[in-house]
Image 1 (tube, one colour):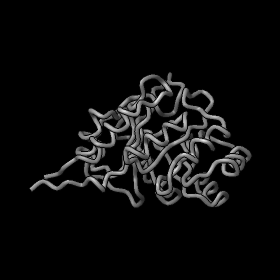
Image 2 (cartoon, rainbow, N blue to C red; image 1 turned 45 degrees about the vertical axis):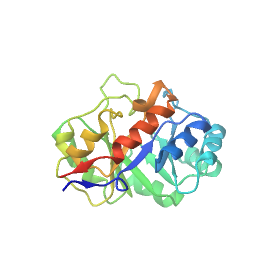
Image 3 (cartoon, one colour; image 1 turned 120 degrees about the vertical axis):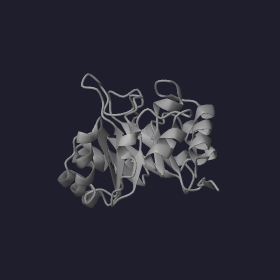
Length: 222
């Protein structure tokens, strides 16, 4: 008999730019909402806007800040201004830097690692002791301006049967149409989407958010 794990797959809706996006994500059943602090991203938000969005997320929905090679000064201002539950480090931060940020700010940290082929997989384990969670994303093309949110998948079969000591989240080119297959192939219990639920870069679509969460939570295994 097939097993339905609706409650087991947690969804993160990343790159929110408006308060109504947080409400739509929460109403759809997302467990995380993400805010981007990277100036070159179309999803970049100022601290005051981020605070307004974060305050719209109800209790029980984790608020995540995505930063890229951020300085201590920026991180200090971020946590002082925006109510957060988790930091997502999406740059070239070393394991030592990840541990330093976690200790300095007293918040859980999720480290993103890009994957293009099997040669990238060992790097994931290098962060397991320094980070509280791992985010496995598509490695951006060399010419890309963004470290994530490029809407590109990788070969999900690379992750089949693999486990790490810390909880991990799957990202990279997921959409309402593909997230179910991605979960089945990888065994992911958490998934992250940004461009896959947008009507335009940086503009979330509430209908696509709801469809994505439904598809992720409806996965069955034989």
